[in-house]
Length: 211
Image (cartoon, rainbow, N blue to C red):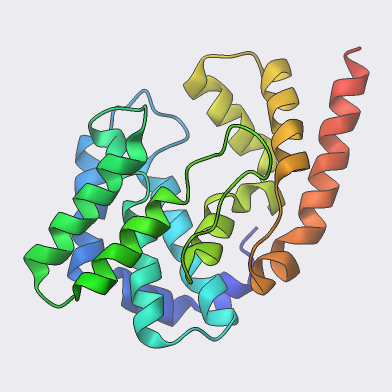
């Protein structure tokens, strides 16, 4: 089911996704990603881009910030084109190259994008993510929006397939992530918080039923 904020911000999302820096990487993802990736697909990057813009617009970010947020979201997993481990660094490099080639963006913009993309890296312990830039909150919330969406279990199965691990283990990993995770933006908490609680209860019930 489409979230209301995606419908409310549909025109803005379409406008920003049409920016050449964003459109170019979406075309490349469509043609270059390993087809064995069942979760980190072009559709996932599309979804994160749309959600990041919608969350940022809901929290009334300015137009330029929304464009930067859209670029960071579009490129945040682009490193999967080259390899799966430590892909965030490659993703940031690809975004930097595209922005420099475009010529519209300042060095501060480019550095901000790099920090945002690197902030999507899952931390090994403690809080799930470290936020280091003024826009990272909306990108990180968009990247983990599946925790608070009604298709959570479907997306979890896709990730389990990609990682080639059983769903039972994936559920335990998901519960551990949920326990470490928090929403960083007001829009994220308001839009996704309630469904995340429901999803967490479902995961707990599924784990308990297998014990």
